[in-house]
Image 1 (cartoon, rainbow, N blue to C red):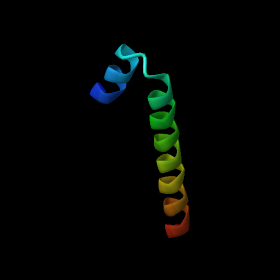
Image 2: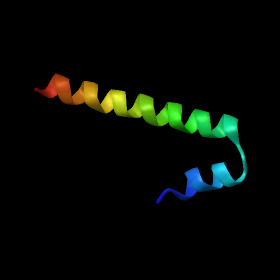
Image 3: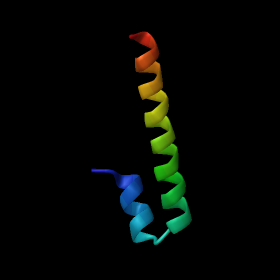
Image 4: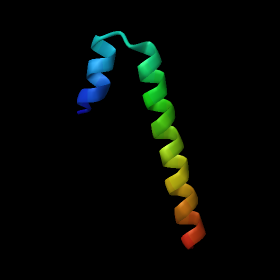
Length: 39
């Protein structure tokens, strides 16, 4: 479902994978914070 994620796993790019997951987590927190502010 996620080509970038698949490439990183296949390429054994652990640092890149962790960075990607960290960025997505941060993005999700920002979205949640924005939604709470709108309520």
